[in-house]
Amino acid sequence: MDISEDVTARVIRRFGDAFRSWCDGLPDLLASLAERWGLELGAPFLVGNSSTAFRCVMADGMPAVLKLSPDLSFAAEQVATLKLFEPGGRVPAIWNADVSVGAVLLERIDPGTRVRDLPEPPSATQWAALMRDLHAATVPPDYARDLRGQCDRLFGRIGLRLSDPAIGRWVTVDDVERGAARCRALLATEPRRVLLHGDLHLANVLDGGAARGLVAIDPAARVGDPCFDAVAYLLDGARREGVETRCAALAAASGLDKSRLLEWCRAIAPVEAIIYLRRPGTQPAVAKMLELAR
Image (tube, rainbow, N blue to C red; front, side, top):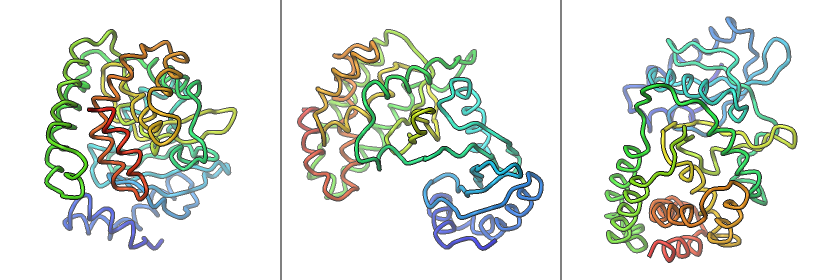
């Protein structure tokens, strides 16, 4: 099958020109997997950074998603992480995988609309249920991925972005330092530690319909404070009913501490503000996030 220029451009942008040969070999790899797994291949999803995904239908008529990555270690980690969360039913089921070629065949979620694109956000009750089921996952013994390391990298990367005038006029060095200090204080006082999704933003959660509920994709699992998985959802309140109002609703629905949820929002707000600045028309929400952070 023909591979769109968009797929090739995204792979090259993420991994570099050396991976152009992987793109050139992708049609043959897709054909081989389609034959082995009995798939009818469809169009690619034009999203994703570390992998590329294609719509497909299995031999029994079941719709599925075929994901492939040139980063074999990333693909293997994704499969292992999805298996950790799979018993809770809040991630797509794995139908097949071959990590030696960076391929995994996943359940396709219906209707599958990203929460970010819905006209109205999920309720606090829905988000609390999603977090509850994700956080019920068993933490493997000696699991090495910790929220502390993720937060260190997060604030390290954001500091480098402040030299961009489009960002620097909004987010200051003081904002970042305050956020990092709040984050360290929260990490030092974790009341309990769970297996976090780790990247639970509104583009990584799909609408699974009334029966299935919300479904999370692309986990970057870490062990840490359960409140962390609420932050992106809570800060989305800056462009709607307000962050503090959403914190109160989620605290009531989840049993998590309202003040701790809000403090996590204050810590991460400078990071989330930079993400929002990439989108047109979000400056009012950015201003509210930074007011909260200050």
